[in-house]
Image (spheres, rainbow, N blue to C red):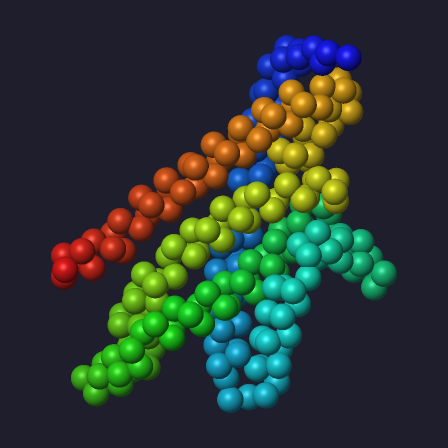
Length: 224
């Protein structure tokens, strides 16, 4: 039986799909921002001399990196309800993506700090800088340059992983697509259009990260 393509339902639903894509972007940006901050804290926890902090950081990273993202969303959306903690689909998806992103970023930070010569921190301290000043002006800029590529890839991953939110009832791009698919039964057309939108969002994210990274690498290019 020949399949007849009908794109009119997709065109009619396009404003709603684009509106839902803003939810996708919002969820992704919040999760990425929180993941960057928490991931840095987790890195310092894992490098701490206190066993409790090391254990907490290592446990978080191991769970985040070695369990499916879908499972993590289910835990935050349904699992916490068993303990009387009920989150909206939006909050649960943001929390799950943040949890996962922070775990991966902690490892990314570890690689970045390992790439910086430890002698530079000592040299900065010798020049009279405090530990905070040394970290702020000497170490962290170099770490950021080292991890910028992996961080960009992580941002793209968070955007695409946000599509799992539809399984928790979130009306982001994939959730809105499934809604219209269930009403029109134009599965191929809707998901093909959605794939294109995701592709464009990911490309725009890469372009944005490239633009934001220009000042970061400008000094490095000048040195070379």
